View (tube, rainbow, N blue to C red):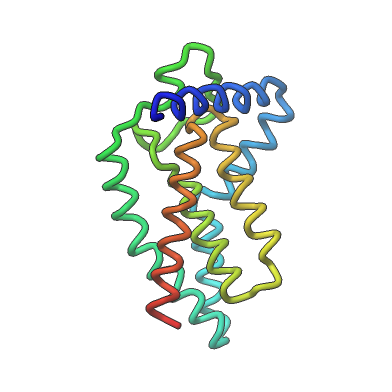
Length: 172
């Protein structure tokens, strides 16, 4: 069964990775991926803290608490799986960005995006469609840009959603 999942993972990766063969498409996915680099999360948390609004302050606390859970788990999973990145394993892979670390599983960009999206939905429900669509695009961008397999994205999403759930269970 793991072999079958691995085969589908490679096939899915190669299909999505080929989407970036045109420069404009690559540029769009790079821009999407860049929104998940962390700067946006910091800006949102600072804005929430400065707002003096109780709901915004609680949201910022939830984000910080969720990252307290997510980051150590992310590092442990990277060290446990030690999964080579697709561009190191697949000769036909087109890599368009330089990842910040050596291993592929899980996707940190995706974990953070789903963590923030989930907390936005918990606190500001009207943004659900936009928040999860954006988080999904970040995950997709990481595959298209050649630095993650689809299962890395799935595990990252689960990690982010789990960390957000733990934070809301503690704070709410």
